[in-house]
Length: 574
Image (cartoon, rainbow, N blue to C red):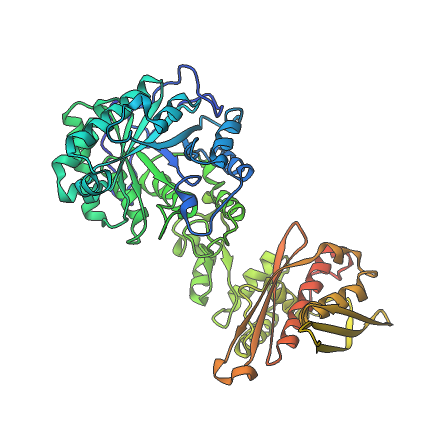
């Protein structure tokens, strides 16, 4: 298939490519699927194979299938699922994916390697599994670096070329679209450019639809990588080989995304990466940064606008299934990617968002955020209040009062960026509309360590609800747990919505470490009612008191959300 060299420089848009990825929408092969359109950029996701090599990452078959569905909905053209014969999980995944109906024209790829030395391709167990599989795309990795040819494969150069050619020819003969991953290509090219080129030409001549240049060690820097990609593109063009050139980068030098983008600029039209940059060591190139950069900055129309708006949701969905906390500072999709804290920045964004936002957050499904701290100004208070549904227009004294209290509390160690519930309650307090669902008379904690090492904690709490005095005792596995259980038992009869509110995270930070065990602590709680989540904060030199403050804010806010009609209303006089 003809290969057009990319002309767009970084940050400069060029006429959009039209992507027409083949397939029937089924996980299984499409009869008579058309070839990839000339000049089209193809997105290839390897989260389910290469991404799973990240330390601590493991997902079930059901989770792999759910991720595959989301990737298809995002508009990914090829999803690499692993090697069908390597383990029971991958084997079951491919069996079940055959009946899956994926969105759009997404196809599934199986991964393997070139035949073993001295073996015939048709007798190689890896190639036979790939050849007999229903999967329409077979990706095989092969050696291009003389160091690996000699010390890993332990064959001569000519035998390595035969291994590449015969493996590709065998799979093409079985009706597969074959992608050849040239492992360690940039190291190989630096060591012996002619042999490295000979390897990819061999794969192309044998029928590979794409030869993918892999920066396997993540060691190459953008300038040299771009020069190398351009040389390969020109070499294949001169040889009249219409094979796509692909790029597959690792992040060991922190350049995986930059290397991928410059690879496309120099003519690569096949891009491999993983969601959130998951992968071995420092990870792979992050498709969540590559896709919007290509579409919005380079002008490559690799996915639709509608699909691009699913990017943040997809990133967080995959993180959740992989049991990895989303990186709040991740470009484009991180919670803080469009967060503004400095007073001057906030004022500028309120006038024109492009002053401190390089794209519109909505384009990637993200949202802008105003962070409130001691750096905030009145404009930030006004904006945040407006977002929460409170009007402070023409109420300068209220703005100033809320701002003064915010700065005073932050000086004591409170931190409201991650405690949206506590800030809204602080603001309602200043507005005179905070609801008190209960008032505390006292609480007492008894911690007992028994003969055989067992530790028990008992909490007794005395509270008042609408004039009724309630005394409740409960045990827990620690002071905070016991206090939480006692409070819930005391008030849940009056407030049934409390049953839906639960804590999802509890963290403690020491604010003045030099004071040792007498240090001031800050407690942050994350809570959820199943539909939304919120954060609350408490600060004290007594960790139990700090926890109590955060716990009360968490419950107050949750009950407020459950019964907004019981509120006196957000409007307040100045």
